[in-house]
Length: 199
Image (cartoon, rainbow, N blue to C red; front, side, top):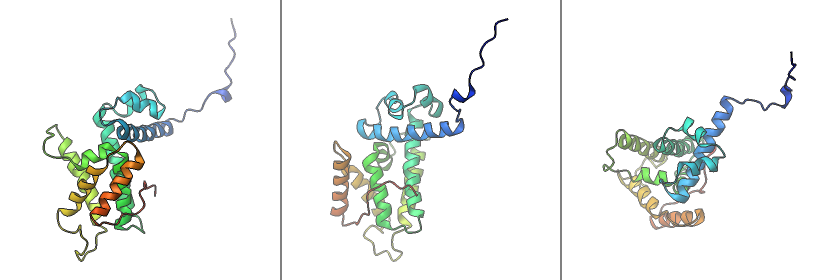
C-alpha cells in the first residue's frame, strides 16, 4: 500500500468564505463605477471583472446580468449620499459635495437622475424613481425650513441636480468635477468638498 504524504495544512491559503465574497462584491461595485465612468453603461462586463481582479464567474455569482451590476452601483451611490446626510455634522453644501463626487464618478448615477417614462422595462422605472426620491429626501433634510434657499421650491432642487449632472462631461475626473462645480456656481449654489462619504 502506497503512502501519500499528508499536505502541510499551514501552506494552504485560508478560505475566507463570506469575507472573500464581501470583498469581491465591493471590488466589483467599485470597478463597475470606474468602468462606467470611463466607457459608459455599455462597457463589457469582462472589463469590470478584470478591473476588480476577479474572474467573470465570480462577477456572475454576485450579479447575474448587467442590470444587477448597474443597480448595485446606484444603490451604493444613493447609500453614501444618505449616510452623508445622516452624519451629525451634515450640511446641505457637504451633502451636495458627496452627490457631486458621485456625479463625476458614475455615468449610471447620472442616468438615474435623468430617468423618465421612456423605459417601460418591468420595474426599472419604479426602481429609478425610488432611488431618485431617496436622493431628494437626503438633500431636502438640510435645506433651511424657512424656504429661503434658492432651491427650496417644489421642483427646483432635483431640476438643479439634473442640470448639473448634464454638465458633468469630459475626458477626465478633474474635467468633470471642474464642469460640475462651474454649473453649481452658475446656479449660485455653494458646494462642499467633492469627495466620497466613508463615514
